[in-house]
Length: 584
Image 1 (cartoon, rainbow, N blue to C red):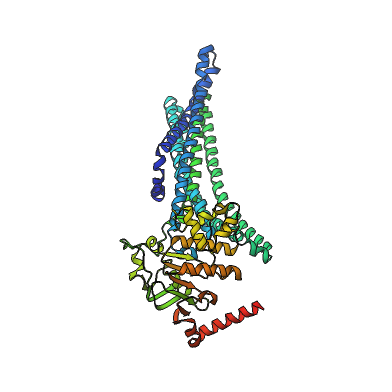
Image 2 (spheres, helix red, strand yellow):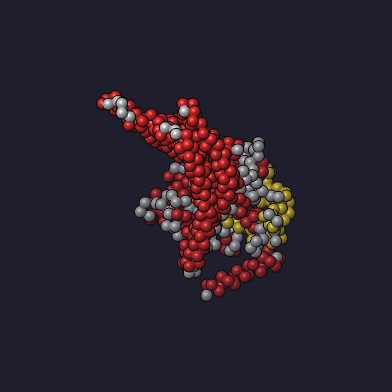
């Protein structure tokens, strides 16, 4: 069952198979020294040194040296086993985390709408660690503990042949199956509790991530107490679930110890009746103890497997989630496109909520199209279908006459540059944040892109210039500076299609003016889709698409639409009135 469930992941041990195998060998040496060495010391050395005709001098020292020799084998073997297992385990953990993270990078945008960031963080960090425990520590225990058990049983059998009266001691081994039932029952309980605890760990991560991502809002709206209560409640729930896991896990040890103690009582009673030699009794009891110690540890292994299965379920949810936007098996090759985009009777829905309903539209190469309409009308969905962040449920989207589903996502997205409302900067230098547009760009190319985005002057004003660290999510820069770096990134990419998701909506008038000038330069000679929330951004659009309830209800220039479309007129007048009120 264990091999069937975890078998596919043992391939990650291949690069460290030598260290892993050596670790197991040293572990078995240590186990043999424990299971067989200690009972033999009790059986032979204790009587030898307490007898009247015991050896003396150098001969006695040589005989007694077998004691440290056995313990050296036990301890050195144990150390090398622990070190080599840790080496292999860290390597496997690294590979597992990269594997899960890689899978996350290839999942569609829709996946992240259904799963919290904090929970995904918990799966990448916590659940991979638990799976690593199953692959390394469990396998290690499944080799070492049986080796200890077999060594101890071997000693018992040997002593039984030497002392026929000691055969009753083997009866004690019949209690071994009695330990299996509680192990199975408790393992089932732990699996259920561990799964809930790991899910709650993801919820806790999510609360923490949300709070740290909204520090300004928390303080601006005096939400500190609310956030403390949210976090405390999540911690309390995790504490309760984790405590239940510990309770069931720790319940196993007393059960096995109870069975062991009853067995030892029985063994001592019979030994007293049969007048067996004290050293033989001591050796057999030691061997019996060495039998039950690995059984106890194997019970812990069973609990670990249960926890790891719960983690594996959570990881396989990520690993086996189908890609709803898959690459074609034989993608069509594509060079630099001219930029013609066609929507052919496109329908799209988020689950059961229809966002686009039988939309038809053609955008000519080099044409700038603005998308306007009330919130939830379908503007963003329309733009998201072009780079295949989602796929149409019905109909098709084509680029230069080729269905975008026939192109590889990499090739398709290399044709498109995105400047969004809240452009993300990575915690890196300004130069590297611009270089995202072209990974092999020289510093001169980066500076030229920055000049075109009206960003060069403020970058040079920093002490470290283009090597200035922008901070987490660009926290060291103003909103206007972040947007101009994002525009420089788009200039550097030099894509034939530009998607502008209202890049000036959150900026002051001066920053907006500078960015509008940069966007005009960026748009020249390219096909541009502008998701417009503020009408000031669409003054240079060739055409405007008016969206309502998932459909394009009108299209034309500003003048044509203002005169002919009531919804457009209403939206424009309402925004103009708001702008006038704010200016006064």
